[in-house]
Length: 251
Image (cartoon, rainbow, N blue to C red; front, side, top):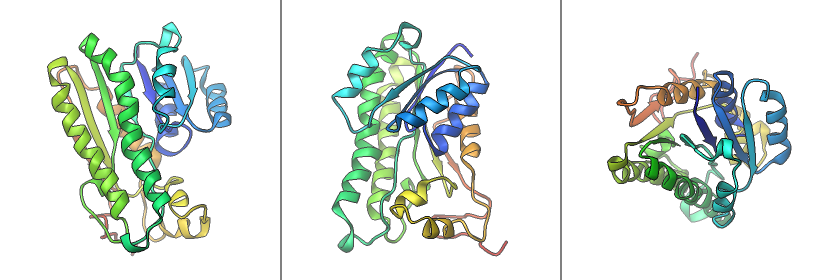
């Protein structure tokens, strides 16, 4: 594949699985994340498959992002696909007991970070009149659930931003896709429960959740459609899940 793909949050979960799959298919990759050691390990492990460049930054750093994009090596300057994957959930509390720092982290990473990265990359796509932006949302962006108000609000914002982008970029032939996963077994719950692995593991008891690779395959499908086909929105659930609050745990 003669395309360059830029992936945020590439060092774990869906981002890491997507990087591994796309590397195996020969896409050039720009992998970004906050953990340099993990970025280094991924580059070492996958460099025999394709060309890889890494960028160590936090998507909340609106000043650093444009500088890093402008300083990319020539081989990686043209970004054909942007995968806005970086995002987190923090806490599981009602609004009246929620932690304000958790709220800021979710809004700053899930919403503002996505917009900062898109703002830095989209102008080159507009100039070329080609490109594809894939935003990783959540079922939480389509419905709400108790004690998840702020996380749901952040993911509803991702859905709204994607719809707006699709309209803004329509005159320039740029595709915009939102992929909304249901329950995926990654580090997501461990982060939500602030490192409590025991509590996090119980989230996935009694049913078969999606894997990060399931979503990676979905992303690969979306970005390899013909030029005239844009998959606008996808909701991807494990078979045992019917909604945010209905999960069959009897299997």
